[in-house]
Length: 120
Image (tube, rainbow, N blue to C red; front, side):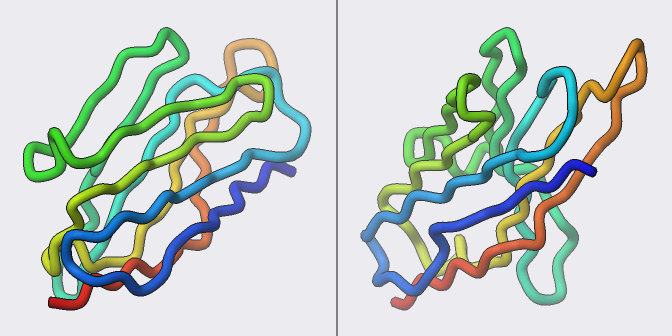
């Protein structure tokens, strides 16, 4: 059983910073892509940032220059450093990973979500 456990959300004032972490645990071969999505009330879930096993990065336009995604492969952990936070960044942030289980089988997993609230 694979689990993604997130941490680091909270309440911060506009202009502040937060760092999210997501650790994958369980039995698996490797983590292919891993990243962060967010969902604000009344809105669809959207990709915030992602990083492949080759190190390719992908950011949603509104967070470019403010958010940085990184991964520690030895610890099966991905981080999202969020700087210059804005009220519109308020959402539940979800970790998502495509994980190689065995052979050619890969499965997508989701974390439980962590709330980020940015006050104006």
